[in-house]
Image (cartoon, rainbow, N blue to C red):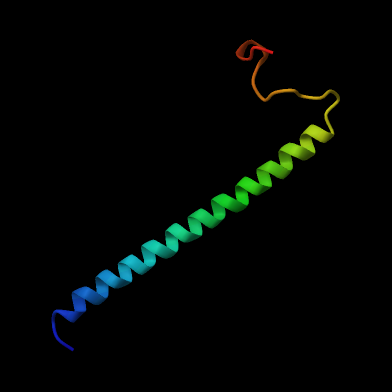
Length: 62
């Protein structure tokens, strides 16, 4: 193996680790987002009154 191949291999390993980290982060964000949507629907279904908006009353025109 030549001396020039070692830095290229290290750079390739770094890009591979960065890609795996980014992919894992995006998958985690997706799963957490789905869990929060399910929690919002469940919370809304057990509420005493129907919530028309997530915003405070003064922030909406309705």
